[in-house]
Image (cartoon, rainbow, N blue to C red; front, top):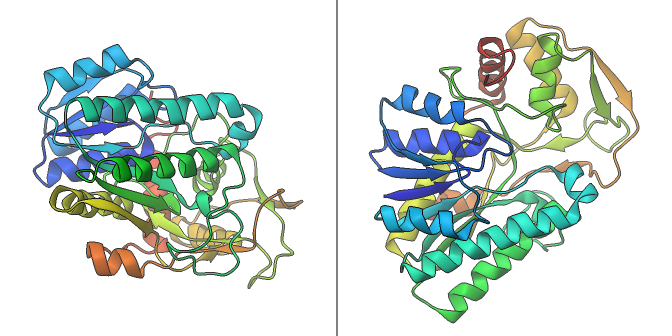
Length: 335
């Protein structure tokens, strides 16, 4: 039995599908602060599998302990956490308290019930502004906003946990830019309010929900002046968690992996590809650069390939097509 925290979220819901399709039994928790319960129903619909869902917060230790008491958990995949970079700069205390204390409570209960295998959802934001690309797992760590710093602090907490007790097995996955949706168009990214990520912003402009896309800066030293990022299909990302889970079930120690495609696309390349495959126009306006944005970030993925046997297989066109299918099927997201 695998416990999945943050199971109703964008990445969590896709990971649940892959876990169930691979034959795992799962139990799920999510406080639904930035997700919808309908995502859990859709996961059951896609996989034709049933599983328990607890609508609880990791900060509620008593409620979370009930999950450990009622289920024979063997390992944890930990997605739960607040995740908006902009919001984290406005509400840093909320981010530090929620993300870090929630993880500490989770690890306390794992220790109590002798479950010492965890896959942790970290982020490429821990690298901050890189000196060079591609970014390897050994690149300097210097998160530049409260969200990224919570991820970095949790990584350190998990390392210290292993140093104190060598029977722990921990896999830290640093994601680059997840996009796309399940090919069925049944689950996908459903942000609250105005999207802070590029792809859902594009799809909402294309469907007429938003008027135009803002492109932050066109004077970077890149092929077309716009920022380059490593976009990875969410299904590829979810499959990376299964590979990491296999490793934590069979080894001890702390292992860190970048999950990306290993190549970058500019904002204008994304728009152009999206327009080509969907035949939809995406009006955009060039505006000032955002503070803290860098010209190009993409992953060195060799470690994941060598040690996990994992590589991303889905290209940019598929990312765009699947994102659009989700948006068309769910113009108002999960209702």
